Image (tube, rainbow, N blue to C red; front, side, top):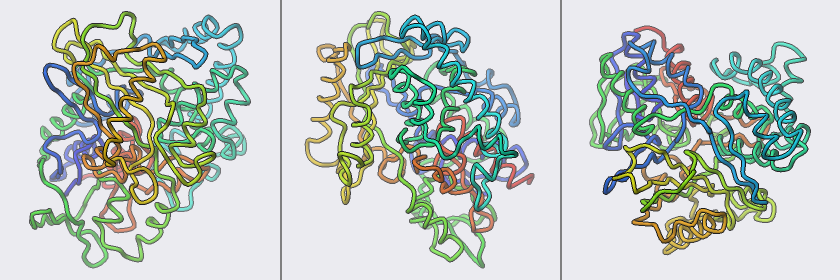
Length: 497
């Protein structure tokens, strides 16, 4: 069996399948494992370059239990409290506690009486959505022609999920305070989406984050990917880095193995692809009638947003800085218009003039050279790299100009570090595309824009017998929890060796 890609989805599938008795070879183009769960180190500064928190850690406890031992024996999980610090456009600060029961009181204290009750009512609705969708959608293979309405077990389930309603619409119904509506809108970006088009069921994202906690892996989240790789190898898998796959081979209508870039052929009766689904169907897999519908669905989907990143090596420390900080703009809609090329920017995506800024600054000795230094991962939402029809992130001078603009935005919002920068590494959507082969640097493959978007995402069982998809660009979607579920689904589809 061949697994294409050593991102977290591919590694988790490899570990599960090796534990089931399969002979597994993992093939990764990069010199290290982890995929988007990356790490950058220089001069004693270290940065997670992908996900910065773990939610639903039970899914990784399940993975490690199924493959040989407890998660806590492999990584050091730390629950974050506060989970995140927000600053709204009017200057109001909000520190969200790490435990769900404390959140309503914190909202009342920061935003005024009634804020906590309205958020609690929304989270009660989100909890009901979670109960309706977790098993039939998130934990199950995606069948052809499925919709949330068809997966629901009753009319009341359909009403709970409200597949006709957007996340923005749900927030408008439940949250009188516009600042809370802004906070809810942010969770659409967890799937690379626009809250004005993403389904209301994405309210389950803050519910899960707050109900089960936000967690950090001491030493950086890259430790989680490394631990899953070790577990796969312990179960007998072979992991080959620096080994790009050029083609998935199909013979007699079913998968037959893979051809590597150097011409080597690995025969396999099962191939699990952790590559970006658009790359798999466009470049790695020969065109055929069975794959026509998947290719069509991918063209009908809106690609997810990407991100523009600054890795800031800083002198000194910032008093009171939370692990995660989010600074909101005056006009959130302008951000989504620019990123997706809609509204006032119809047909012309562009870098966001006044973006939301996210700062991840772990208080972890593994990330800094000494106690008088900090390492900040700074992220703003950005349109994908698309020289033909959108933003060419390789255009001379663009990355440097925009990096300075982001630093200026940080300064205007109260985090001026311009005189503390030892050095700055800029990572654009074009860099993400080069590093991970995700089309345009789209972080999550396709977005959740539209009621049918989740069902246009490629299924885990491809139309080609023996070929399976795992990872954030396939069902059930992107982010560490869903990637773990995709690996579980694929292992169930393949079965014991």
